[in-house]
Amino acid sequence: MTHKREIQGVVVKKSGDKTASVLVTRSVLHPKYHKTVKRFKKYLIHDERNELNEGDTVIAVECRPLSKTKSFRLKTIVATGVK
Image 1 (cartoon, rainbow, N blue to C red):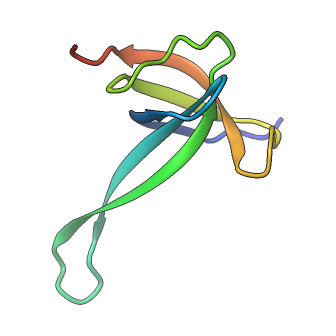
Image 2 (image 1 turned 90 degrees about the vertical axis):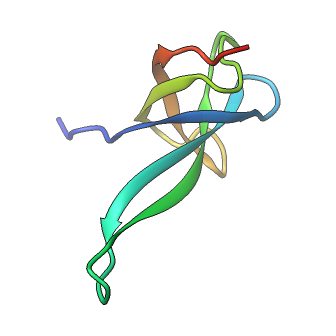
């Protein structure tokens, strides 16, 4: 069986029913200046029970495409956001 990709990020928006937008940050080395820079990407993840709130840190796992832009589903909530 193939390994499913996992991403960890922060929920930045509740995007409709059973969907959340997650911002994933990664650090890469700049090819010319050899300095660590941050790169950001947003993913839509499937939240079956509508349990996510903005600010939560989550882990999502890759799955079959659920819509045109949604290919990840919620695995666990690592930390809840501060209200």
